[in-house]
Length: 462
Image (cartoon, rainbow, N blue to C red):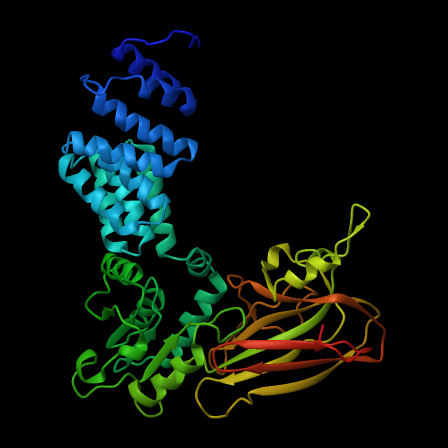
């Protein structure tokens, strides 16, 4: 583009500035914007474009100044408020940004860019209900606008964790929970479903014949979704969804009069069993919510471990040599553990599987807070990692687990595939031979599990 002319006409300068901006050259656009005389009819538009271009070059302070000048010159310019809001968000002035977005929306209530920008700013400041409402409004205003639909879908996907899809599609899990509920529920049963999610287990309890099901779900989006799903499936007459954590339930107001649930079903477990607060959830329910001798599903949860040889797994979070250079210092930043799907699992089991912790969810037996295990090693090889998986005993008949496919699975329960396995890498790896033992020291604080594997030579933690 020829820029040798000295002073283009004001209309020409603005037109050239727009072209440069559209072509990705904000620096040249700045020069053209500054050539627009302050008294011309294009002055305010030039100030707005100048602010946008300065922001694109990284001059956020200058951008804010020019956009503020545009607002002073014409307080009814929605575009000036929109772009000043964007600048304020970039420099961390969220309250000022929200005020600018609000004013822009007052001036142009159906502007797609304002609706999306305001929604994303609200999302970033934790105002989720308002953000979702604006994104839905943007989609309703212009259904074919790709970014509005993308933003709404992205927002919705952040409200509900992706693992819900794998969980509800886990046929073994569903079949075993349904069977356990069939065995536990009677026509007089009142069932409490903690962490109800989509309401799937609640509907299973209703189908099994429960008189009433109380489903509690702390996530507002999931609770609203569960109500819709339960209604769609004709179960609203017997299933009531409460948008609460079970710790917030009040039996006097949340349960039928003079009634306590006599069946509890809950799947509130993570890959290390207790990371979602399962122990406190079950203990609180037993003490404050349930009828005496209530049936609890599952009854027991076990965290299992096994030492494996798998260099591929180890390289997911360990480092030694790369390109002929020593990179072992990187290991000080290695993850404490990594999560892997069983479908992509690769490894050879060097030890027998062993229980690390067994948690009795009925409260019949306590679990020590610390254990020390000396694990025999019957196989020779290089031990790269300690792999964990969980096993749930739903009742006396049903057990589900997510043990990785090391072997044909002899002695396992029904395989439950929606949980990931958790892997603790040994850095450096340990060469082992038959007859050795590896010491595992594990502790839990009812919320988390921490495990140390001791180097058999140095006695130091790996």
